[in-house]
Length: 178
Image 1 (cartoon, rainbow, N blue to C red):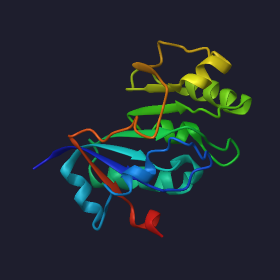
Image 2: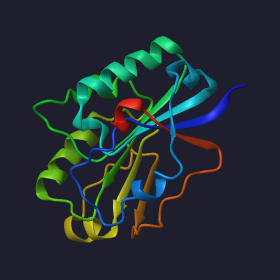
Image 3: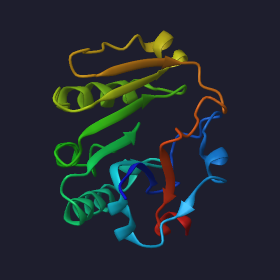
């Protein structure tokens, strides 16, 4: 039986250190993915972390492996940062069906430049979502191209803001447990 969504934690590594990070809460809900082929039970795969773009080569391999497992997955990426030197954003973007990008509480000028670059690469045919922390919104007033985003949400995030939707399973890659 095909289930709706697997939220797949690729890594717990993150360079943000947000006070409201839900990963501490989510750890109790995570189930270790024992068999990669079990992902075939889902229609949608949401790759998250930590920050998946901190390890682009692993992310690209995971995206390719998912397409080999079943070509018609809807694959979404949850991200908020990348290293322009080591990350092939066009390579990532052409392998996913949508992106959820978050501008966090401690957003910097460098983060805003990266956001502008990501936004320019987006395809309006994809399901793209932007999440803005209110502090980032007030400090930077980002120029949002609303033609590129299907949904834009402004949140005052707290440790209790994020919850797992009832139609999702939260799975963690074995490599992320190390």
